[in-house]
Image 1 (cartoon, rainbow, N blue to C red):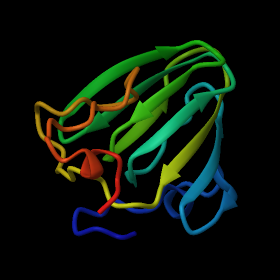
Image 2: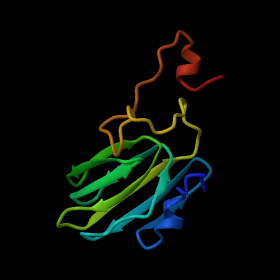
Image 3: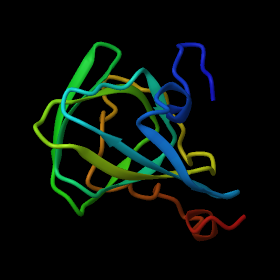
Length: 139
C-alpha cells in the first residue's frame, strides 16, 4: 500500500497503534488504540467505517489542512478514502475499530480541498442513474 507521497498502510507506519483483528478477501478490520498526546505517522485508509469504542478528541491533518474531531463512544462514522496524520488532542485514550473495504471505490478520487477530511456521519449517496442494476452493484 505504498504511495508516491510516502503514505502507507497504517499497520506498517504505526504498528504500536494499529493492529489487524480480522481480514478476508472483502474487508480488513483494524483496531486502533492510543493515549493523549500520541500522534500517527502519515498513512492512508481506503473507504472505511469507523466505530468508536471510547470518547476522544483528535486533530486530523493532510496537505496543509487540519480538522479537529470530537467523537463520543459508540458511534459509527463513514471515513472516505484518504491520506492523513492524526494526533490525540484530548484527555482520554482513543479506542476505535476500522472496517476497511477492499472493493474499489465506486467513485475514486484524490484528496482535494473540497473533499471532507476525517470521519463523516454518513456514506456518500448512490449516484443518480437510470440503471438500477448498476446502483445495486449488479452488472
